[in-house]
Image 1 (tube, helix red, strand yellow):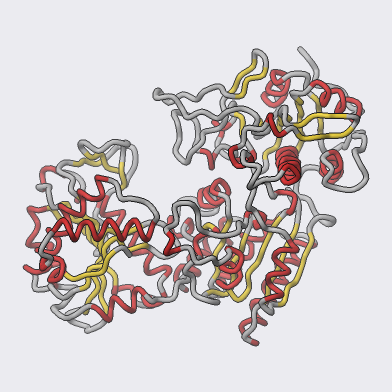
Image 2: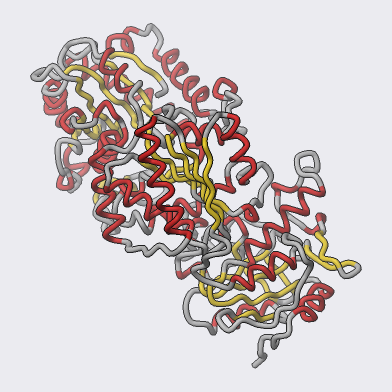
Length: 624
């Protein structure tokens, strides 16, 4: 929340500019960024309108929570009104989205989309649907609202528009959490407010909302159990089932004996870590236990939201990021499932975090304290960026210093749900990540490995294969922003072959999918993925370009720092040469182990190509 006030206090301010400056300063202090001119203009034009309406409705003492932050997210509601219900005397809340729109109309592109005159960026979410989802989210995650579905209401207030200006938008209003009012309907808006809030101080109701425990509600867990368990059927084998039962047993013991149990599950690509995570979520929700799934990867989290959570915003909200738990209640939920835990960082703060918010608390401490049973699923060889600290030793040591019991399950030797264990071991030894030195590859009937003499051969090999296929490369070429005409720059240039990197950001560019969906959307083929978009995903056929930052000297594989273009590795102060060497080897380990049916490899460096040819007793990619 950026500011807490009442209509009486807001309008009593002698200088409106002073008030807006105070709100802007609170935004900067709480988010680490300066508000945009459009945000400032919105506060200047909308907040006084709402305050005057509250006074005219006789609700001057109702609390106004301005820019209310939804728990465990970065989303903010414009205003939440907190007060006392006039009939029941219970706490009552009204979420209000304030829009300055003058004209808007429904879009044919989607049921809940609208087109707004003068607004850049294309379609927007219908404001009534926006506020309805905010209300639903608050009821799903705030304990103070548990079992009180009638305590939260929502309204979109288009205070600059007449009815004819938004013709068609009112038809999408669904319930009392998605009402829509124009300036022509101001009288109706005042009645709506006065039927849900009384002229009594709302401070106590606001206190209870702001101090509420945060965890998934029982209603949401029952819904999630049905959606995940019935929609996705998983069969757990061997050590997968061991890990699953360890967690479920730990949940029972932790609750009965009032203690904390940490479970660490390790496994390479394809070992089923995420299958375990989803199976646990479904069963925990079925039993009425509170649990959330978290990762440190935007690509991975967005894909989980898109597929297990497809068609359901409420399911999507169960998939969080590691930095979502800075303010979480100690042991506030039963289980926190930390998938891709090798992505855990030193702290949840970043360069935009204001000094007042820099507590010095470690991200691992936040994750461990949030639930009675924190579960960490990780692959230590996938630490690929400076500051990633998710290792078995790091988690165990920290947990034991806090007095927590730790249990371990390794999936590496028992199970792989795709690809080849033999090939994975070949990759580890090639890169010096396992003992024994490089070994010859003499084939695997269940997994195809090929060397390509050119990137053209690599791409043709993948194009000819059935199923899903992707190309990836080491970060050895610049990465440009897209052109103004929604085309991508062909940055990855090798001879007369050139292809673009995948889209940099989380919005699609033309027909190209956003970065987090590059590995799962069909149009992802044709762009070259990097480790940050490929990590956590698998596809049938894997094409890997070993960049010039990897070569051979005196019969040994070595890394070449000067050939790497990853900004994360630029500073020798933060990333030493030895750390760079280890991280680049981990990067290529990730890239080389994404395939479930086969991998084709092309090395830019001629010496490395020859080195690999001598190790692999298999035919080269066939030329046409």
